[in-house]
Length: 97
Image (cartoon, rainbow, N blue to C red; front, side, top):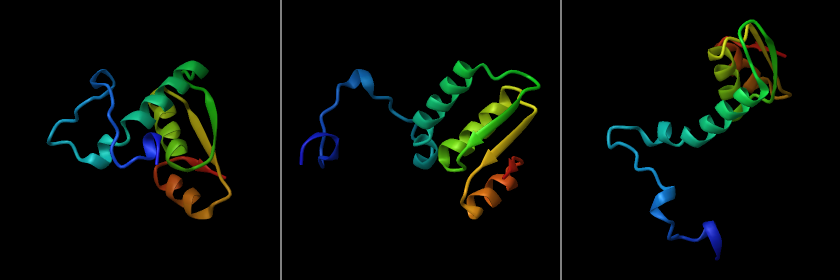
């Protein structure tokens, strides 16, 4: 198997960040998706008092909801067709539909 699906992959050290030993790997794994979401929220220009719609309540949708709130969005509606995901995002305080 070639590419990143290989069992071993030699990657340049400049593109690797060593996580602290005390950081749970499950939390560390969210670093890249969180960076993507923060970049997107900045690029969209979310500011205080705005109403935001997030389509999809998966990992990226949940992160988008939380980051939009941190950036000051007033109301964040998360839409999805999966009822279980909508229930989860509602527990986090989003308006789900």
